[in-house]
Image 1: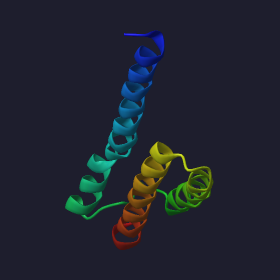
Image 2: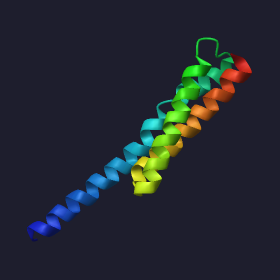
Image 3: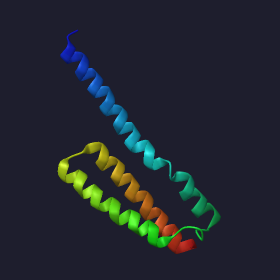
Image 4: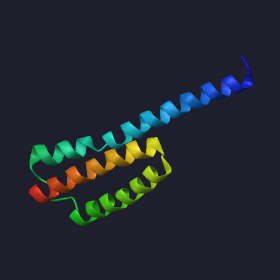
Length: 94
């Protein structure tokens, strides 16, 4: 196997790892979502902070789409969903 082929395989494996992490990372917020909606309480969360997170993530997502950065698009989209779900939870139960 030549050096170019080995590098291509390593690069592909790394790209797959990054894509996996891009999906996994936003899922770390699922326990927070479950806590808010199962307890019907979000009194300890700041609506202003979560709105800022969502707005800033939206800007980064637009950048990623414009640059065609697939892992960042995936991660940004999932984080934006997380932020919006938590914003709804804060509005309902805060």
